[in-house]
Image 1 (cartoon, rainbow over the protein chains, first blue to last red):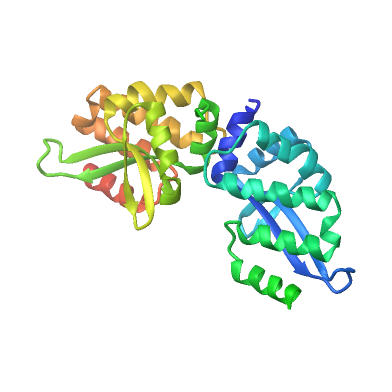
Image 2 (tube, each protein chain N blue to C red):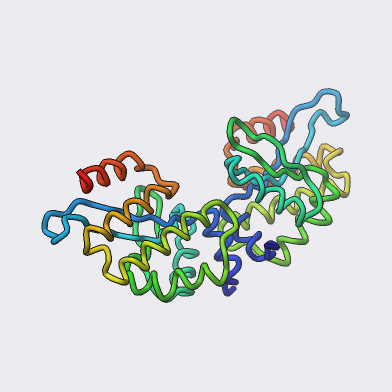
Length: 149
Length: 149
């Protein structure tokens, strides 16, 4: 049975994550690496559903997340920018996760415009990322302090 | 923004639970009480969304689940039978939760036909309920043993 796009939006509102990893990386000119990703984690009993979602979007990968959990993950910036973000603009989220999605979308736009390669861009991204419902708020604040300091 | 029914189906595929509580109740003729319920639990920051879902279905209640978690819950058998179950037949689930829904739906049909008031009906319900993806498999097996024993 084909997935309805609104069903996907509802499922992602419950199960999806829009995450921006920001890592110190001394091999990069600006010293920071920005890794936005869209992820859906499921128990392996529902791995077929992850493949159906992958087929729907025609991008991303299905891989082991941890233990008996599998994930569908999209990391390629062009796929996020041209497929994933337009999809959730057309079929909007309704939970507070929508706020995360909007910040995520802004950060992806900044990386598309290569602003993440400038110190000012990284500062913007760290400031935006602080507002996300993320587990590593403390770490983000520390990175921002290091950049400013 | 109005909720699309497919969005609701997707959201419930991630966040909803179809549960059948079976309790010993010596005040009832057959000694068992069957309590099917449909529940969606969310952090209280998304309580508005639970009210939107309640409005959509026009039944059930929104109440505290535990701590900072709220729930939308439908327990009335006529509402389960006439509103909730037909909805998920029209807008189907795609995850393995669908199997739980199908068993739930069979059990609700049995209670509509008052079969839960007979020993044979309770045995059927306990046997069906064993197949659900429930946390209290051991307890169900014990109840079934008590009934048979």
